[in-house]
Length: 272
Image (cartoon, rainbow, N blue to C red; front, side, top):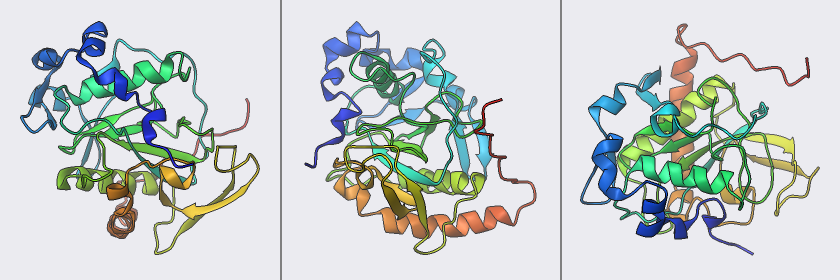
């Protein structure tokens, strides 16, 4: 029953016709403030990066307005009880000639359109192959916004999505470095254990792999395929999860020793 992650991201939407129809033709890269590289990777310009928010040492995040100031959420999102972190990929072509901003806007159109009808882009954060980190779902920089993903609302996670297809292609070093720093920041923020073999426990809210109410125990940092029947985040990325967990832990330890980096307070899940 394993399937690709194109349930979350429309590969067909990457045609030039679709991009032009959505006002996202690759030729507009300069207007959008992103430089397109010959390799197909993209890099945020200095002007755009000046809007980035520094949230931790070595981690700057572009706020949602950097890609979607004109694309408001379709409705409210709930508050997540964060127990673990889940890594995804878009499964979009690595030689795509557009921009990171294009890809995120395509994801937004698909996720909020008739195929999914979610209130916003599914993922809390995106990471480009050059290491640029973007806020995804509105409010994720401020707190634990509930995410969405194919296979059902298994819940209890913050979702980080790598821009590209990592079935056979290894995520570039810059992307991996940003991912490790982002995972460490989120683990510290939500007081998640990253010690060796640390695991989260919860009862699933339901997915195509786990029926609602099923008891789940999973590593604090997991891949999308651990929660639903999918190949996401790609075999090449999934194999790196043990290495990413190993690299995250000392960063979390260091953050907890710095008095200026306090953990975010958990938002109340109780109705007022």
